[in-house]
Length: 346
Image (tube, rainbow, N blue to C red; front, side, top):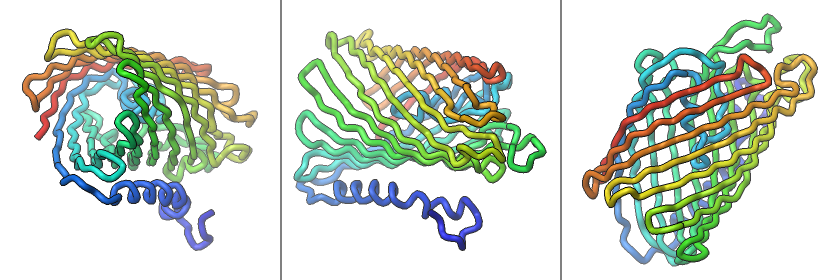
């Protein structure tokens, strides 16, 4: 609980989220500072992607549906606004070794810059550490922070006037992944997530704590064909659950299934095909809440070509369609995203 002297909810957040931050940071420091036996090597990857979307308010959530991103990120009311979005990125990696085995520490920063709707501009920051525990087993720890992201307008409930206000969201997530290669063909992984979502004052009752757990399996059919299948269960509990004053409980249960196939067409050209199905059941029991008995279904298909131009340079082209349906018709949407980009390792 936060102390009574804290009056602003943003100032309160660091103390409220102290336990998970402490546990994650302690585990990361223990692994990072474990005695090393090999000199560290540094590398970096600079990337850039330009995307066209026909649904600005759902672009960010659609881009993050993959397990490695943030598949439960909320989105705003669907819009018919289209835009061109530029997202430059930079990742710096430090590879080393300890008595446990090889490890990698990386810092990644990515921006999302909207050409015609700059109010949606935001950043995505990630700290990650991966430790090899044996030749076939590794442990990944990741912290991600997406601060002050604009989701669009919505109707607030706190004043009782049903005013249309900006919805802004700050997300912090901690992710662990234990991966084991069974043999040359099969790989198994167990994924876990914990997160905090903090909204601006007008929607403070939506502040949510969530956790997720699920398995993922990968299978190499031939040297040129690999497939994967994963499932993730997630539960989120909002501060406003049971509060009849606001009737705005965004607590939920989420089921997420992901299937993928990676094809090596020629030595320098590969194709990734992906499908994601996500069902989100809201658990509100408030009679005046629009979330009561509501569930959302999302289907997403992705095709991405990657071309290795040189040992350090790669190009990509992708198309992605996301289709969402809801028991609240105003939440139905679709989003087409076309992207071109590239990356350079140095």
